[in-house]
Length: 115
Image 1 (cartoon, rainbow, N blue to C red):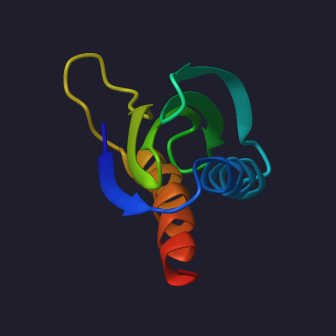
Image 2 (image 1 turned 135 degrees about the vertical axis):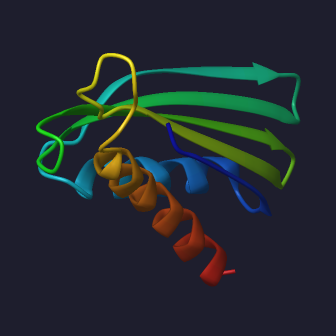
């Protein structure tokens, strides 16, 4: 499992759309599995997205869960990968997880660079 978290400022919808686009277009096998959107009042928004892709390095599928919390222009993103290991008791060969998470990190950093 690999994890990335970041606090930033920006437009919730714009940020979420960019993340979705970058993750789904970042790999030929990446797919959007499901998601949830919640709005609490006028200021608080929460979006959960689950993506999956095939990892050539590991010969298996890995998933990426992305949660974006917004309060006005204050945003927080948490991205966690899972899968990618073929061992029964010990987790090894997590290169596919790290590579999938890197797509998300690059998208966040690209969004921040535009600010």
